[in-house]
Image (cartoon, rainbow, N blue to C red; front, side, top):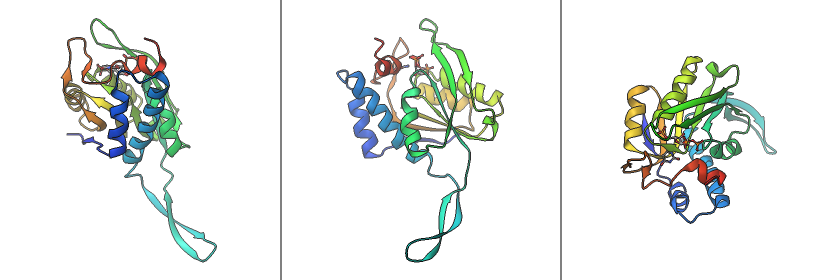
Length: 209
Ligand code: PRP
Ligand code: URA
């Protein structure tokens, strides 16, 4: 079964609590998603491989360590995933960015894929698939299907607020994928919204409702 982790860093939890508030402006919401995205990237990148490198400091020669040049790709699920990309790029500026466009049909709650644009060597990359919300799990499952269809297998799914139903669904469909969330909420309501959640992440991020 996949590794599932709630990242309980105090800065993440503090910022997430502000993000959830109904009276947060679009500007603040955007800034907070960006900051939490960056903090989550710190945790998710914990096991990136290092290699030795010989360097000279102003004082002495030494063997230091640097990233072993592992190729990375950040893949946001549109729209709301876009809000997490810049924060992650602040920590990992050389990462490539792919996009998977998906929306939930409001009646059936089934995801509909409308765009897939990925780096050509996606199969060789470590992928951070990002979306602030994991509700029924339909969007994440379809996005992972889409990546695997293109031979990408090294995928970590990074999300901010998850429902237990979504975690279970992704773990059953893709037991090999590691899942990182900032919060595990209580349940989904009859409209497929996470409770207590933070509402519609895409609309709050882009000010569309
Ligand atoms: C939201 C969210 C996820 C999806 C989660 O996207 O950003 O992609 O719902 O729900 P699920 O786990 O039940 O699939 P939405 O469909 O609202 O599209 P948007 O980001 O373009 O607003
Ligand atoms: N998508 C969102 O943006 N919010 C939810 O609560 C569920 C799905």
